[in-house]
Image (cartoon, rainbow, N blue to C red):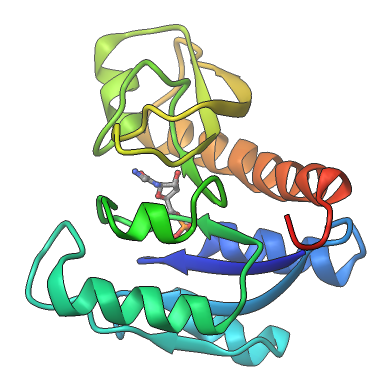
Length: 195
Ligand code: GAR
């Protein structure tokens, strides 16, 4: 199962996926390409470390979405990788048609809250400020509804009295680093070529 990772930031989740692959914990999945929408994304350094091609794809001119020529360039570059699964690992742009249609039911997203609670930006901060006692992370299929597609799996994280935003952030990230590779491995076991 050919996997393309899209991200915008540090890439700690992409790193967790690549580590799982190296340790044979990614089932039949193989990461074939990493793309970032920022030239300074830490994510891009993972390519050399793990022997996977990693490239910046220019998303200009918009800040929080992909549109027009940039969207077409993303679709073309990803299509050329012949992906069976497109993994959004901290990709901070809203996707819409025709991107979603191009990879229908093959795009999954990681979100740092227990959806449907706290969609959108800063899922960890939203949960912390609201004072909930349990939050976590979600992997779901990407549809037109932002953070609203079918949920594949979730992991819960307890918020203790002593937690700060920093300690909670670390706990949610640790949960993500376990959940996302596990979901990809499980999807790969169910995947049939040509699907
Ligand atoms: C992760 O916490 C992920 O859940 C979040 O961005 C972070 C990326 O970290 N994604 C979203 O908020 C999407 N709306 P990373 O670059 O270290 O993997």
